[in-house]
Amino acid sequence: YSIARGGSTSDSTRVFTTTAENFGQIASYIQQAPVGLPTDVAFQTVSMGLESPDTLRPGYTISVGPSAPLGIHTFSVEYGIQDGSSSSLTPVFGNVFEITIEITP
Image (cartoon, rainbow, N blue to C red; front, side, top):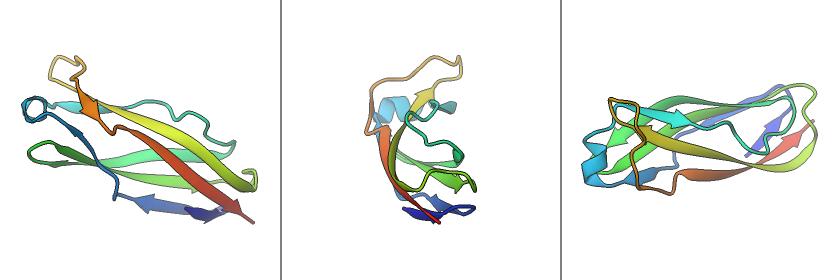
């Protein structure tokens, strides 16, 4: 993504999967704190689509503040899923997203 300072972008094209058995038990999802997120950049999950029988599609927004460092930056975001007792459901596949952004003036 190329994002100007003060701008943002949204996406919902990435997916991750689990087993059909786990999919039937999903009560919530969790997003771990992004790793490597540049200063004055925010990552927010705004939606989570459930696509039976085993696929989840997060919608997210990346916002870049006016003092974010210019250049190309890579950070990662990890998702997990939980049952009604807030217990983690595993296995989950492809749930760590590496995201590269270019911050422009």
